[in-house]
Image 1 (cartoon, rainbow, N blue to C red):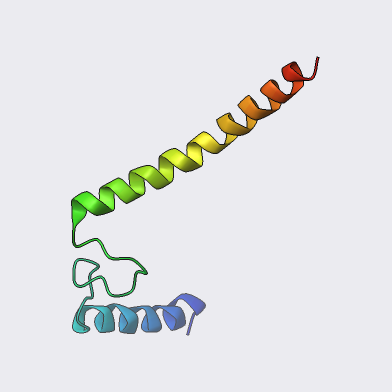
Image 2 (cartoon, rainbow, N blue to C red):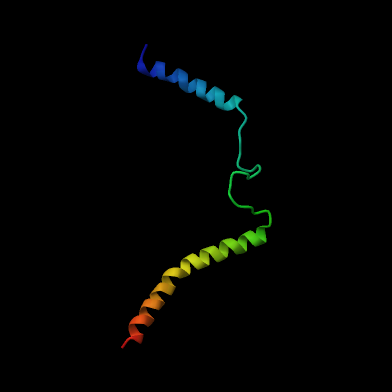
Length: 73
């Protein structure tokens, strides 16, 4: 028996099991995530504020450094 013939049998079994098993999708209930977004508007505001705050930190640090260096003259 060749190597290809021996390795094909487990692949067929995996394919048969995959078709027979019920497929879980991510569109069900989202109980595995650590936050709640039932209220999508509130969730959107929280995400936006998080992203804006995180993006603005380097600019705030640069402004602080520039004002600190120009103020000590």
